[in-house]
Length: 56
Image 1 (cartoon, rainbow, N blue to C red):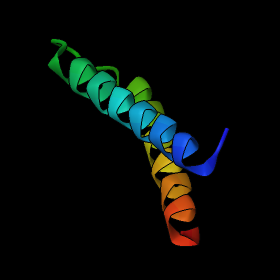
Image 2: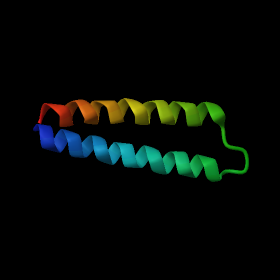
Image 3: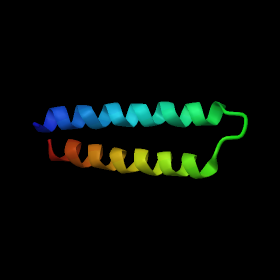
Image 4: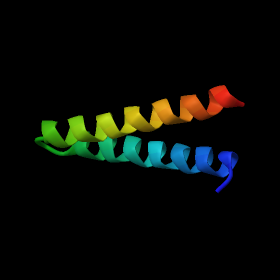
């Protein structure tokens, strides 16, 4: 997988996580543990995207 396709894949995962966070927040009683995990994953992906972009 080349760098551009890796970055695009990560951006898609980032967007999917954003949607999962929004969906969890729409529930009557959002699970804070689930939200924390999703946000952690999203941040990890954001950091990896930033590293890839910095190299180019």
